[in-house]
Image 1 (cartoon, one colour):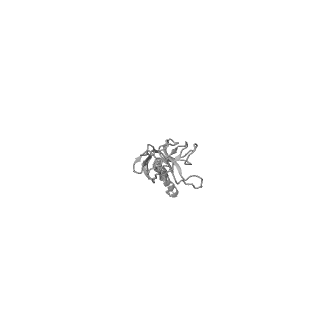
Image 2 (cartoon, one colour; image 1 turned 90 degrees about the vertical axis):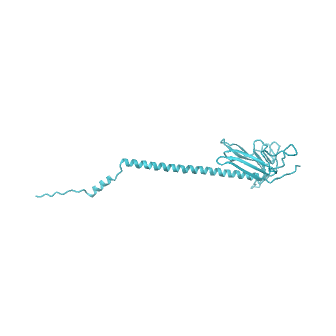
Length: 230
């Protein structure tokens, strides 16, 4: 009897399994992939962090710029609307229409054009003051004060609002009809040794130093009014 020997070849299924096992990742390859992924993730996080920080700074600067623009607009509106209307303060003393001689304020003025949308029985003129002082956070800020009436009673209190935060200084300079400048107003009369309360300046120069923007200077022209004292 003759026996025929047949060579058993690997089946296709076994070949595919071996091939599949040979395609797996080694531990070293897995660790390298994790390291590369970590480096990429760190780089993406740093880029995202810079984007968020830049966006925050831009938003803060935008808020500061709007605040500065609003403050300069308020100053311009008040100064250009100055009228020659002295007032009586809360102790009955007369204050000039424009003055720096009142302790606690860098500038006081009477302005016209106070809106009255509700038609209340009050003047359209308003007493306004500006002063640089510390706010509730301990930062030097520019405040605007305004009173509900012109001639004040003993208990009349002004309203106070911050218009610029984080300023280094606020300076007011006055320009008379001859172009002379002074840091104090009213000026002394040439004929008498007293102040001329019935004269308002021809112009006012404002200087202020604001964080991130430096020194800002504005000159506002005022219509010169001179009235003979009665």
